Image (cartoon, rainbow, N blue to C red; front, top):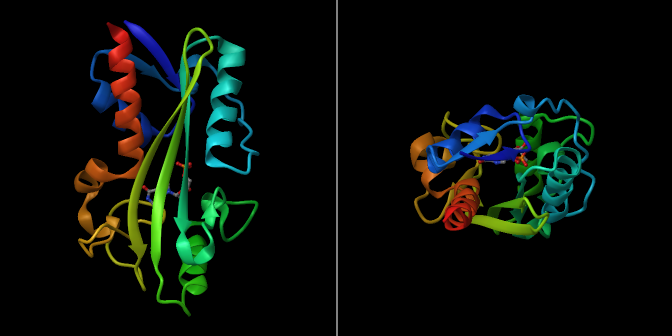
Length: 196
Ligand code: IMP
């Protein structure tokens, strides 16, 4: 069976893509290929970070691989936190509660709460060819936390017109429409079409 490395050790992300690809392609994690490095993510863009991580793996393991990067882009904040989404409150660590608090604080004085989640996946094939896949979900930032499911900014991000936050929708409904699911589906369609 064809094998591909996903430059992550995040169990949730691995499960999500394995569910879509089924038995057609074996998806390996960094741990499974013996890569224990803290892969640098120093680019000012999501595309740059995803490519940086995928290239890091390809240069060392010479195997088809892909990496992802996600950002929350808020219109009233000029696209911030964007590439800084994971470390919005503190540049040196990830603190979900503090990140959400900062977001609500920054938007306290504005009525424009439009935002989108954007995921970029960078794929490198066996021949070294690179491709990017993007998944976007538009929505808005709620005025307070609502719901208990999910992770990260889920309690304050409400997609589309439903009014419900990701944390209120339930994981299954979220995973059908999420930014990451949309990018993963594009990658899977591409991989499926190359299987022959
Ligand atoms: P990553 O690139 O997947 O690590 O995502 C960067 C940051 O974006 C994470 O640390 C989360 O705070 C946030 N994030 C990514 N995806 C989601 C999501 O589906 N819901 C809520 N927050 C998310």
